[in-house]
Image 1 (tube, rainbow, N blue to C red):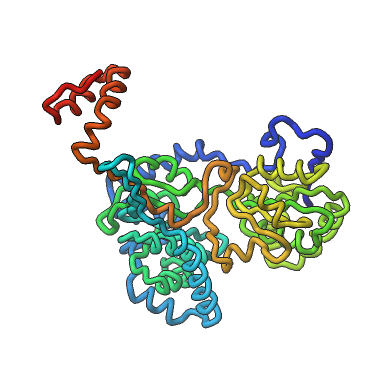
Image 2 (tube, rainbow, N blue to C red):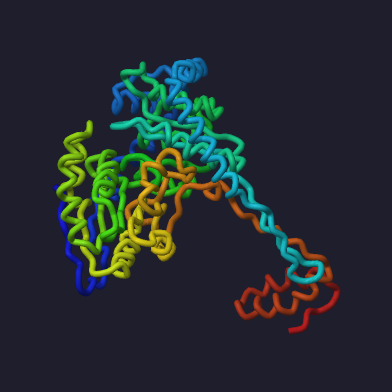
Length: 435
């Protein structure tokens, strides 16, 4: 059901070449989304409607979800689901509110200060995927940090569903209503990203687009990056578990399965020092997979080249492996898990010990589940309040402070053969700045 890679002994020079990873050719998808994005750019709402009919089989009179549909979805929401969403929102607000940045003013010299001022982007388009699963939790994870950052205008797009009259799933709509989001569009895929990037007669252009999606969403974000800011190009979801002989194979198997449930190309990777644990997990998987609803999808994901069990000689090597893998989600199920977790450098989010499974982070930990995939956690962060803020340096110097800096400015301007830079300083004084 799941393959093994034996890395006991010396580790290869480039671990990334031997570790399991899903194939995701975003570059190839670029040429397919380019005409879609250009169509939306030139024809606006008409193109969005036609593309939605072609790809989703839904005829839209308007892409915007009516206010009464949002109110109705919230009114009809299962009370247990509403309570869970409200608690998820409460916890997410606690965490993200503490991420707010404060302006900092530094006095460089008497009369000369630099202030770093944090300003939210003007407008964001938040993408919530559809497809095999329903993701009201992604509404929470997108909207809460944007709201806590103080973004003045935000809109949500999610694919239309035939079975719900061409609207996004009602639970998605209810989550938007709970969060006070009244601008929601029944648009998915690359056309949703293009709609936010260029704007249409119905939807104003956004400064930034965030949120997970399929390869077409990722390709559109790559294509339009620069016109819009993006969080990341989300690829197939992934979990890595670093475990030793103290880990419970029932827990480990359940966590590998939970991530494989997302998609047939979802990645589930166990890195372990214990052959006994590897054997026990392999023995545990078939029974748990058979007992779950999406067993075919999970079986395909676990058997795919993107999943596997990696054997290592010791925890030091295990840490090197998980740092090279740079997982979206990394669980640490070892003795002294907190200390081991503190040594990890590359991960989207780290889940410490047996009682912090990834599924907790998906819904209720308070952390954000929009995280870098495909090894991008070695250089990128998950979605946060910071995603939606820009640091602007405000320079405030008096005449005296500039006079003190003038010789240095002129010297460096001359060194770079940019004499007009020095002249711009000299023009403010009736004396010659010494060389």
